[in-house]
Length: 291
Image (cartoon, rainbow, N blue to C red; front, side, top):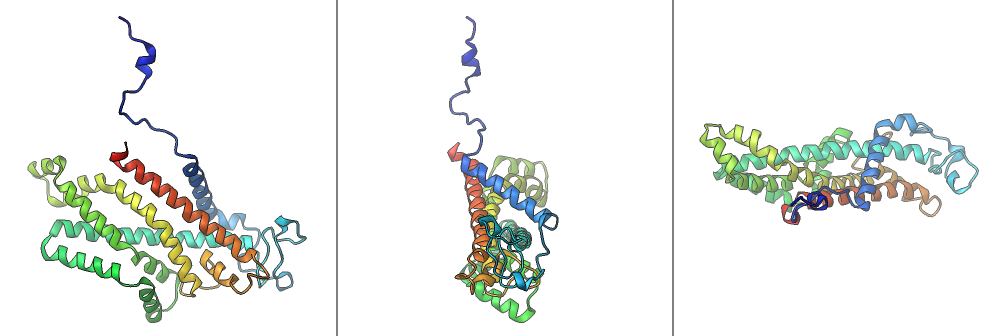
């Protein structure tokens, strides 16, 4: 009896075939791609220098709303173009958040793997540091660091990178301990593979997907942390700019020039929301219980 072509084409029950991401995730991916592109080519597309001041054109409403002025999204209290400053603000904020996230992930993953590998008092000491980091108010640590070392761009990267490393340490330790009992790790060990070869060549590649998901979840928190520090005057310092600094500068002009806060604020909200949606989607895709 010949097989029915429809039966051959029909996937077996229980298999989950790749599908397009949900509409919200697709829009989020498009927005993040746009943000990254803006961060890369900001000097090429900004209509003005982000630090150029034109006092005679200060607090001008956005031309996009039909007002007669040269600034598409309006000007600030010093006559600087809000669009240009937002483009550069995206650039600096993304750089801080990206390097901060990578630094925090490197610290946490390294300590988590050490705790799982060395065990004993090493594990207890590292997990004690994790508990201390989780219990201390981070804003106090940030203020202390700025008081001792001053304000600088790379110090801000170090500060935000130090935030959240304990999550990576906990997650990595748990994943490594679970992977050590898996068949592939025991097989390599029986064949004479060293412990560090097992960890770096076999276990780490198998847990990297979960760590990437954790990074996408932490990334918007780092953006908001940079925004909060810059709002308090502890982050990016003039003449540089960032999304948080733009919001901070606008707080005294909300009634006169709402666009100064609305434009960078909208970028912050849309970016953090998009990354959060992408992180949730990746977490669901990586969870075998949902397949």
